[in-house]
Image (cartoon, rainbow, N blue to C red):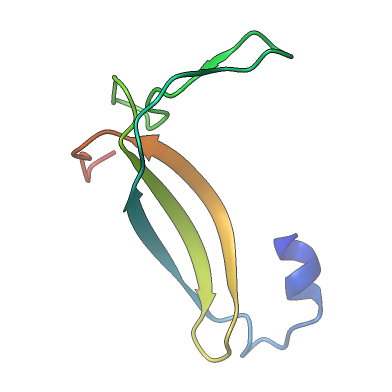
Length: 83
């Protein structure tokens, strides 16, 4: 999606910054019946336990108004910034 968006932009419009935002979520464990996988644990490398926060990484335009989510992870109460 990012490539499609960028193909129609000028070089100036492509200038961007990486941002991240976090929000608190209600901890729970859910079973996906189709795959049999259990969801609700942290997905951030180097972290274990039940997820209590969602962390989203986005690119945002520096000269024009646009945003694109590029990654997200579920984390616990604290996050190691080095990770």
